[in-house]
Image (tube, rainbow, N blue to C red; front, side):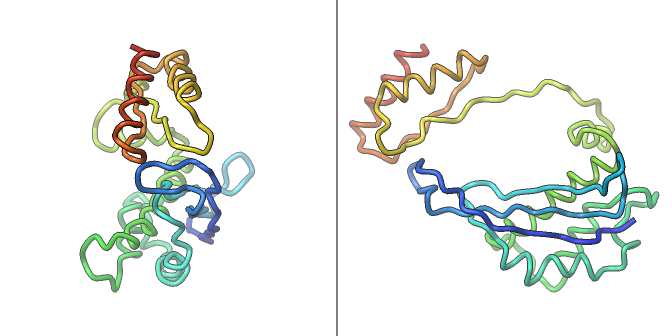
Length: 203
């Protein structure tokens, strides 16, 4: 069992929305595929990961440092104790060889994107949903229910209060009991008006 390739592609988010800090039309994101030699349903297991919006693609760091450290490692050194799956912690350690300890923002995004793809591959190899696999590893029982909320209310050209109200109402109609909207990207008066419009719509 081994990782045979790690592929990264950087793509533009290319969305006109923005929040108080980020204009998404200028943002990129990394998409990563961790390709293994394990076959499930007649196809190689591939784990996928992406870095969250607001963090820019990290293709340079992935290709220049972290990808090759994993691919050049002895395959057996990246397996769990039973030898029947990849070990995300050992793969993380391989990526962090020759790295100074600490957070170092852009580096953590690059490593984290690969790590996400590795965990996806691990769950697929185990043929379990990742949430269940993680719970079992910690001796727990997975709860199929999880608290979620809808995040919206982004700013974009031409979006008026009626569009904002419709958007936030649509989340409630889909069953969300909690919604979050973006503020801080407009004047205090405008944001106050936006908040009041949404409260009047969903309260």
